[in-house]
Image (cartoon, rainbow, N blue to C red):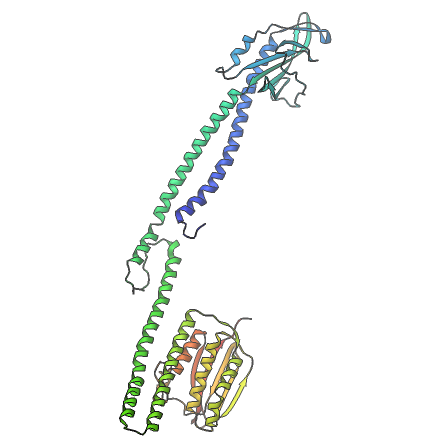
Length: 468
């Protein structure tokens, strides 16, 4: 069935197919019952004909010596022939098959009486052929008695089947047109009910079609049936996701335009200054290089922030080892650690998480870059990865100056850098977005000495452990 098949057609098909099958089976059953009843009625007529013939028999002699005589004219059977549609034939015979009167070519009965005859008589009914036509035959064993003797006659009366077949056809046709009329009524009622039932769906579609292109507000359908509630809720959820994507896209474009404008303007000024010779060439090139480096870092971080949102909307998470991802990033930043002469310690245990590899590496890289940048030369930098209390723990402990309570509230906001000259303010925002996408949490805590002085900053990330 095509995916675009209408609901009306599907309901019609679902209703009419089983209903038609039921009507066909029921019609066959009712037809057979009606035919059996008609057969019983016509068999009773045959029995009456046989009794009529049997009552007009005479006998002389007794038992095997009895001589039977029949004075039945064929005209006596015309009363039982209905509307000249069927013909009746008879044969009267002795028990041994010797014909007494009637149609000699009518085969003699060779059967047996049923154990429980349907009537209070010695009678049997069977189907046969006579003169190349199907007939129904009634056989009556008729005792014959008179003042001159006693004997037993076999009376056979055969009737052609035209009247029975005509009645069967009439019963079938009468039944079929009534059943077809019932199907037509069911089909019309189904179409009408579906038309009325789908009116809220069409109204909802028209309301959505009439919306403005940028209108992604929740769908209001108070009159919709309860069956449409899941559809309305799902569409509202989709619109909500689209609204978040559009908001993110608008924010990205706005931030990109705002944040890149400054380094590009600075770069343009530096190039113009170099052309005029305001500063020696090596100094001008160094300044231009620093500006390009800051712009490159900013652009890369903004792209990373956009990629986090993309992965959040289309997660392709897999079971990964957080410790392995942290070791790989630590190896990548080892030159930076060496340049500052930091006392680096890595303590990891196998810790599974459900995530995207890029997200784990980007999270670790931003935390390590911040720690390296803020740690004084020769300070200690410790990274810890292990399972703890049902979570995957990642702790980056630096030896920097820590953060103030006021700065702690806004450090995870994009472009809210603690030191504007040394960062873009996107690193921690990227970390927060990654952690939230993975269902975890992140915190920044000052590490204090017993006397209350700040020894450094701990960035603590907790991610859920995968089931199993």
